[in-house]
Image 1 (cartoon, rainbow, N blue to C red):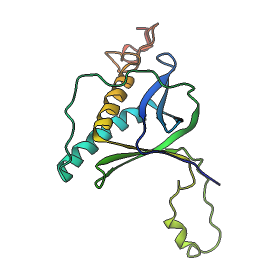
Image 2 (cartoon, one colour):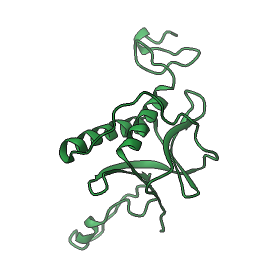
Image 3 (tube, rainbow, N blue to C red):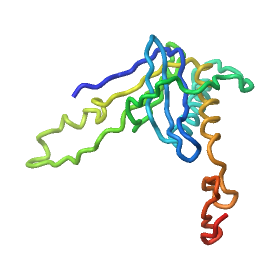
Length: 192
């Protein structure tokens, strides 16, 4: 099966964004460059973890390799909506991060969620030892983006704003509040 690698090294724009009202939002990573526009869907928690892990990666790159990091600037980044049309190329299953020391850039790779097929082995276990060396997701579509530390910081800040722009959490249980309230487990199911 053929797969596509959508590489943007570097992109003109790389952002996290959403489509839909709070409570029904679909999260996307979107890369634009060279006349191409690629949007991939993912979960809110993946966007949140991506921002957190990118921050950790930048800190570690500074500590280990002496990479000069940009100062945290006031919010002046990209606040524009996602570019249209927002056509989902694939749903992200795995996110990978790396720091390229030679170019002092961050590499983000979003890999499509694959359908896991159960492996059934018949016969001796010694027959296919070299199959273990194959990467399980090498035939899946992926989006690869290479960012400077400055662009990475801007992505992190926008991703955090996008995640926090949803429904406010209930002060008692932490679950998101709908405009009409919600059934709070801390109040034994009474409407709040």
